[in-house]
Length: 132
Image (tube, rainbow, N blue to C red; front, side, top):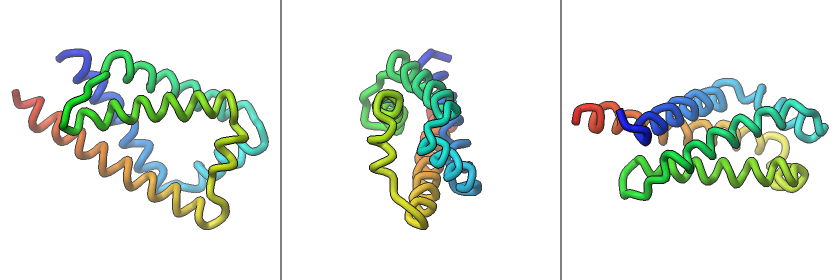
């Protein structure tokens, strides 16, 4: 298995689990957002893990092709951008965050989108690429 394929599988599985978690347990993510607003250290650890994964994706999976693989590349760049902004300007991201019931709805929608995209990437990865 080549490096790009391995990174794609790890990232897709990671974000699939995240997506499902956002859908079925939005409360833990709402509590996490509350921790950010209180300027606690826990969110920084979370941000560093995501930053590391995003950087690994960018360095080892910088694929710009017209197939589901590009989703992982976009996720990598998006995560790095978001985590750099978060680590440097956390209040800015908090200002962009929806409030109240809209926040819960947004968390669940993000979970649905990530789950659908990662299932698509994994199906292509294991059923089509894995069969080659």
